[in-house]
Image (cartoon, rainbow, N blue to C red):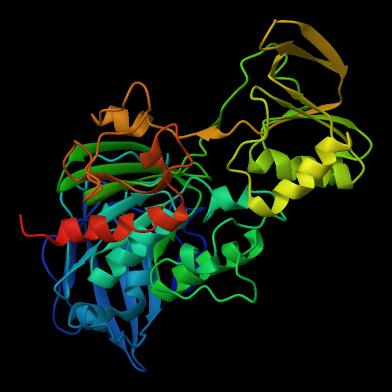
Amino acid sequence: MRARSVRRAAREEDQLGRAYREVDLLERTSGHGRDVLPALDGGRRAGASLTERPKRRYVLELATEGPERERVEVLMAPRSTPVLKTTLELVGQLVEVDIFRHGLNLRGGGLVAPRDSRNRSHHPGYPTAMSEQFDIVVVGAGPCGIAVGASAKKAGLSCVLFDRGCVTSSLVNYPYYMTFFSTAVMLEVGGVPFTIPEAKPTRREALAYYRRVIEHWDLDVRQYEDVVSIEGGEGDYSVATRTAAGMEHSYLGSAVVIATGGFHDPNYLGVPGEDLPKVHHYYHEPYPYYDQDVLVVGAGSSAVEAALEMFRNGARVTIVHFLEKIDRGVKPWIVPDITNRLEKGEIPALWRHRVAEIRPSSVVLRSEEGGTLTEISNDFVVAMTGWRANHEPLEKLGVEIGEANAIPRYDPATMETNVPGLYIAGVIAAGHDANKIFIENGREHGDLIVAHRLKPS
C-alpha cells in the first residue's frame, strides 16, 4: 500500500472503507513513541513502530508480510484535553489516522483494545477496524437526539449520534417557508440560546440553530450512516451501521437511545392509484402546482398552510377531510385566513368525505354519510395525512409496543424501555399521537436519560 499523509487518509477514509486493516493492541503504549506495537494485520502477525524525527514529527511504519512497508509521516499537534496525556501526546495526530481513530479506545490516557472487536461485518476488500465504544449510542440526529448528545457531553459521557440522513433531516423535509408554532426559547436544547428577532422561528432559522448546538458541544454526529442492526444488552450493545457509500461498521455501547422521530413513513390513504407519481405525501413549496387542480387531503396545520400557499400562487385548490371542519390544532394566526377563503368559496372544501380512488386525471371521493361517490378533475394530490414512527428496531430488541396506541413501554421518569439499557427520546415515545410530544417537551428526555445512566446501580 502506498504511503499516504494523515490528512489525505482522513479525507479518503469513506472511499477506503474508513479502515485499512484490523488492529488489536495487545498492550498499552508508553515512552516517547518508540515502542513496537504488536498488532494483527488481517490475521497475520505484524509490527508497527514509531520513529521520532526533528520538529516533533513522527513516522508510523506498519509492517506487512512482504518486503513493502507502509510509512505515514505524522505531524505532532498540541493537545490540551487531560485524557490525552501520556500516549496521545506522544503520537499526536496519529489518532486522526483511520486505523487508529476507529481502532482504539481512550481510557485513562492509554490506548486499549475494545471488547469483542473481531468478526464484525466489513466492506469487501478491507479487513474490519476495531469497534469504537461509547457510553451512549444515539440513533437519530434530530433535535431530541441532539439534546441527548448535549446532555451526555455535559455529564462527561462519551456519545455518538447516527442518522440515515443529514442532521435534523425531519426539519429539512418541512415546507421551506414554514414558521414554528413554538417560540424560539421553547426549542432550545443543550443550554444554547436560540436568539432571533421574532418570537417564532422559521424552518431556516431552526436548521441553523441546531447545527450551532452540535458545534457548540462538539458532538460526534455520523450523518448518512444508517443503523442496520442492534444486538446485545445493557453494558454490551453492538450497533452495526452502513454508510451511504455502502461501507459497514460496528460500534459498542453501554446504552442505546432510539430518537428516530415520527416521520419514518407517511400515513398512506390505502386506495387504488396512490402509487401514481402525481400523489405527494409531503409539501415543500407552492410553485410546482401553478395553474393545476390540486386536492389537499387533511385539514390540520400543515394541510391548511399548504392549501393557502398554493392558492396564493395560482393553484386551484380543493380540501377534502373526513371531519366537518378544520382541525382545532391549526395554528391560530392562520385560522382567520383559511376561514375567509372557505367562506368565499375561493378554496372549496368537501367535509365528511374520503378519497376512494385516484385516477390519472381525476379523484373519486366518497361521502362518510351516505357513501355517495363524487369524481373531480385533478392534476395533483397532496396528502397531508401525517407520518408514523418506525418501531421495528424496538420490537426486535424486545420492547413492548401498545397495540391500540403504538406507544412503546417505557418509564417516563427515565425514558428507559422495558429492555434494560435501551431508551427512547422524542416523538417516538408518543406512538400514533404525534401531537403529544414535540421538540419543546421531547428535549427534556436527554437529561432524564443521562441522569439515569449516572445513577449508581
